[in-house]
Length: 121
Image (cartoon, rainbow, N blue to C red; front, side, top):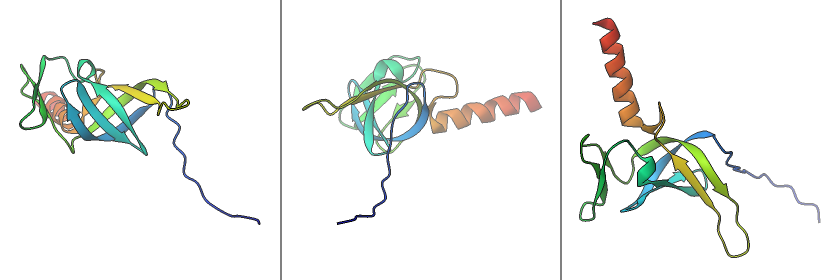
């Protein structure tokens, strides 16, 4: 029997910049929903700050900056590692936010506004 269907695919590419929503926060980092899959954003790849985990509130907190990461935050990240599913393995995607213009979108916007104000002043 002939079948007609549409398919939507997602193929993560190394070095691709993508935005995703934090769907889980843990002491070792966050998981971001990027398309149909989740990517790991490890604490070492979040920001240039010492990060602690507040289990009661379910947030990661930057010691010096006071910046927080919680469920629902949106990040712009770069894909740095991709392993595809094999056998029983579901595959993994690793991302970083420790490069210029990457990170929590609120932080990027605040930095852009701050730079714009400095140029005008």
